[in-house]
Amino acid sequence: MKLKALTGFLCLAALGLAQDIQFDYDRSANFSSYKTYTWVDLKAGRATNQLMDQNIKRSVDEQLVAKGLQRVESGGDLQVAYQMGINHEKQFDGWGMGPRVLGNARVTSSTIDIGKLAVDIYDPGKKQLVWHGAAEKTLDIKKDPDQNYQNLEKAMAKLFRNYPPQSGKK
Image 1: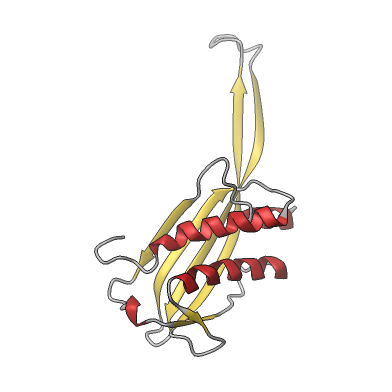
Image 2: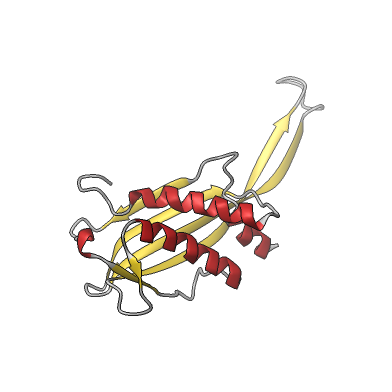
């Protein structure tokens, strides 16, 4: 089930709830000086499935290339890493026949999976984080891998609207 939940993060469906996007950046960083980037792998929070790892990296690559950066195998001006995770929350739904009628009231509970994908961009020369972005969404697990990937692309496009940051904006 955990693999399905992780795969579900790739299902950031266009229908339903929108992604919660957050980002922050180093205001002293000169983003116009960065031309290349290299992927670095973090042991914690990485996709457990090789295909999922490839899909996440491919969708981030598409965004960074569109921003004018070039991926290199080593020695990039920037280092890029991601982490992902799933939180499980309980949802309680209740209904009844009136405010004072407890005998006819019913309460059901269900588990909601909340997926989060965080992308960190580091300046290896300064040895510090220069940009952090995260997308969070209630998961909608789909069986169609093409639709899952399209939804991941949409989420990353929304996240990377904030890269490079515009001066004076957060």
